[in-house]
Image (tube, rainbow, N blue to C red; front, side, top):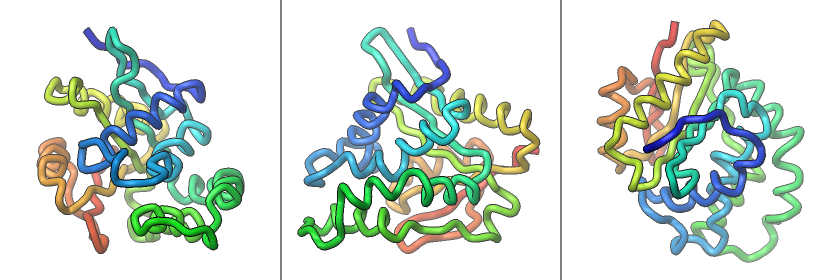
Length: 198
């Protein structure tokens, strides 16, 4: 049995654990970083603070086992992060402290975050991140999470949603294509995929 429920800021620790456990193309990333929590600081934690009403937790008898975090307005979210999220993390992870190469790549993103292209957020202003522990995969929960979000975005008259996916995560790319996402841009190590909501 499983339950989809609204997230809250109290889910931060659970979301961080899931983010780390799935941070390497769906596999455990904890051994790849000295500070694997950086993954969540970048791609999960801020959403729970900025707009928890668009975030959903998947639970089973053993507790939280997956999540979808999102924002309806990426440009506004990025401004919020610059004002309310990054400053504390920049103090916690200074650039002048030695880091291994993988950690350093993430720390640099905290100090110089990527800004979404206007050409993307014009038609796909929302964005999402989704992760499911292996025990929750293959059960249709990814589809259920995205369909729930799409309904919420329609209620807010948001025209589209986008996401980033690693170019090596072929399973995820196929999954998103099956749900109607299409490639709208590319990054050095991945794709940007978008879905029209309205």
